[in-house]
Amino acid sequence: MNQQNWHSVFFPFLKWWPRVTRSTFRDDLMAGVTGAVVALPQGVAFATIAGMPPEYGLYAGMIPAIIAALFGSSWHLVSGPTTAASIVIFSVLSQHAEPGSAQYVELALTLTLMVGLIQFSMGLARFGTLVNFISHSVVVGFTAGAAILIATSQLKHFLGLSLPRGSNFHETIFAVVAHGRDINMYVTAVGLVTMIAGLLIRRFKPQFPYMIVSMLVGSVFAFALSRIVGAGVTRIVSVGALPSSLPPLSVPEFSLANIKMLAPAALATTLFALTEALSIARSLADKTGQNLDANQEFIGQGMSNIFGCFFSGYVATGSFNRSGLNYQAGAKTPLAAIFAGSLLIVIVVLVAPLAAYLPNAAMAGILFLVAWRLIDFHHIRKILRASRYETLIMGTTFFATLFLELEFAIFLGVMLSLALYLKRTSHPRLRIRVPDPRQERRSFVTDPSLPECPQLKIIRIEDSLYFGAVNYVRETLNDMLLANPGQKHLLIVAREINFIDMAGAEFLVRLAEERKKEGGGLYFYHINEGVCDHFSLVDDLMKIGAENIYETKREAIAEIFKCLDKEICAHCTARIFLECRASAPYAEEKVV
Image (cartoon, rainbow, N blue to C red; front, side, top):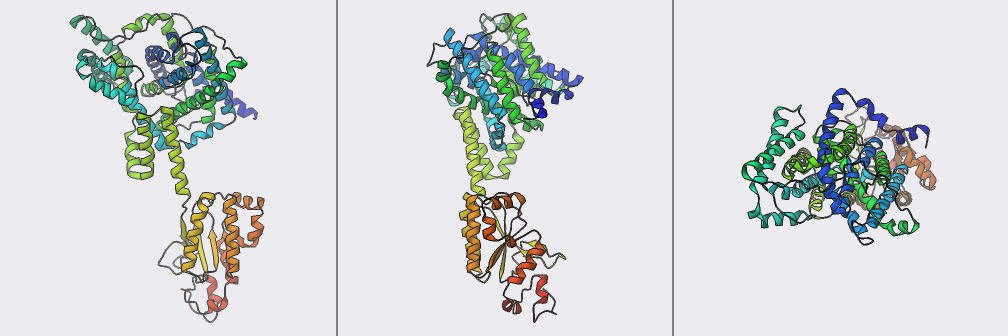
């Protein structure tokens, strides 16, 4: 890795720092304040799900968020504890230690360090290209599904219901329907007031931080209801005995026994965490037009977990809640995530007890607004109109996100994308080309009304020629040549062929031998340089004949014309080439 690459890897924040202005600084500060306020109750809930002491959820939202923002690539991704990651942590560690115990915390910190090292190594190895296999339709479907999951997870807070923690989508919907009579209208009123306040502020005063203002409005309204109607009107965030101190330093137990025990879990957690983070970053990058550097994001996520584990943070990854909130709050640069992590430290140290006055219903109303704006209705409509394949990919990912595990939903969408891509590329278009006598240069066109040469078939293959496409190309060519058995010569326009593997090369060699046995030949025009190099490596170029590969159309037609049967040319009425003018007895007749 050269000096410039090292510089970009370890000082990536120098790329976006010039974008920071007085205006963006103010926007990022407001977004950071909003994110820090929301991270306080969420961090406690996530830690509980992960089987960790409550304060560890807050620690995981501090240093990791700052490091990931400094050394990552995304402008809006906010790292920290998440529901899905917390569930994964609990599932892999609860079988080795008692949740909440000192041993459990020690294993969680060790697992976090291992995950960070793997992520960092994958970034240095440039494995970020894997994100290219996440198609836009997968991102749109996953984002819409995750938005609905965000809203669904807040229903119990919005409606004032007591529902089981960690329930999936359909279980939550069934539970809400079953407990419809228990809905607390006062709690719901707090959520509605918060939502309406947010909508009005965005509509009439967009310069104000609508999320913070609407939270304050919801909190004041809840307090007023409690005074007017009585105690217990609305549920308040239960934060317990939160520490009012900085995250303590910690040292993971990086022993050989722990490494061996946690290695499978570390690999699985790494793949899940990176998939979740990159999917979120990709979806937000699509909204802002950012060119996301997936390799740098791998490095940033890895460093956030490496540093985080030494400051009592367990596995952190991209958070859909806080990243979506960050984007909707008007964040412009990663400085917003840095503010969020830093201000969370300040909030915990100074005002942690005041978090008890933030109603769950108010936060649920805010997250409803966030979820709604995360759904990309414009691209959903566009995909539905544009392609059945893309619609299938988007729909499958969307429903898998709702009813299956998040990481599996993404993998399913990616696998379906690859399957449909392979299906398309395994059936490349083969177009019959003929010279157009209406053009001065007689460019090749696809026009069934124009005559073909009775001895020469001209075909353009419009995709890569690899093992999956060879059979289709062979069958299609055979049908074409059987329909015109006199066309013993075959010219392939190879401009659209960007890749030929071993199976494709061997197919072309056999095709050349077949054409030669028929008394004709196989020729190529406009082969890409990389493809030609591949032929040289496998000696197939020599078998086909270097003299049968041409760079220009004029050269190809001129040389192939010399190989045509002149007796057939003498009685041909098509005469589609300029060279046909010299063919007796029509040498002086006008070429059609």
